[in-house]
Structures are given as C-alpha cells and as structure tokens.
Length: 128
Ligand SMILES: [Fe+2]
Ligand SMILES: [Fe+2]
Image 1 (cartoon, rainbow, N blue to C red):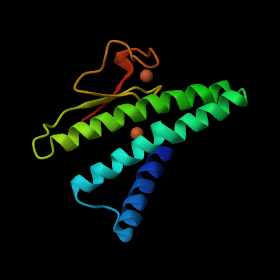
Image 2 (image 1 turned 135 degrees about the horizontal axis):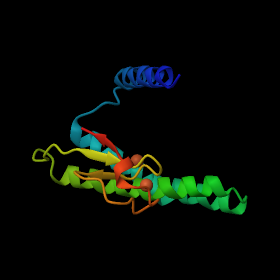
Image 3 (image 1 turned 90 degrees about the vertical axis):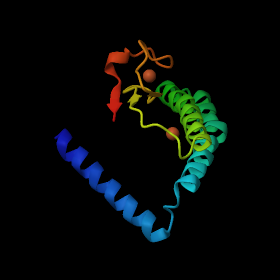
Image 4 (image 1 turned 180 degrees about the vertical axis):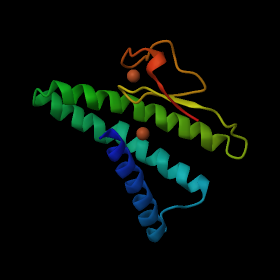
C-alpha cells in the first residue's frame, strides 16, 4: 500500500511542476532560491510561531511538538538556501540527510543524534 501512496505523491509532484510551469513560477535558480528563502523565513518568523502559540493555547501537545520541529527546521532550510545563494555557481554537490521524525536537514553527514528530536543519525534518510 505504501508504494501506491509514494507513486501518487510522485505523480502529484509532476502535476505541481506542470502547474508551476504554466504559471511561469519556475524561474532562474537565483530567483528560485530567493523565493525559497522568503518562504522559509515567513514560516519560521511568522507562520509556525503563530500556529505554535495556538496549539499551546488549545492544549494540542502533538501539534505543538510538530509545529516546533517544523519551525526549527525551516530556519535550517533558510540557512542552507542562504548559503547556496551566497555560493551560487560554485556550490559543490553534496548529499543531504533528513531526519525521519522532525525533518532536520543536514549536509554531507548525518549527526550521531538529531539535535532537534534526538533520533539516531543512522535513521536519517540520505538524499543523493
Ligand atoms: Fe522548509
Ligand atoms: Fe530530528
């Protein structure tokens, strides 16, 4: 069953890219990175803090943890994009490792333990 969901998710990505192309929303790399930075920054500066606050007020512990993880990781994504933008044209290809619990995203090597959620680094998903 998981394969069907992964296949459908892949197909939805194909659709999303086609829609974005139709909108003219896929731009040169520099602009794509700048937009990504703006999106991530909005998420960790405004969107997730507000959602986190609401979850706290409403006593939704699981949502609070989930929003907190996402908030911390969006900040990391923004930093990775900032670095990519600063080095545009001379970025080296590296593997990335993604924490399966909080989404923490790390370049080159998984940490021994996720600094955000404490998941073992051996569980990280390699993106190459
Ligand atoms: Fe992100
Ligand atoms: Fe994590």
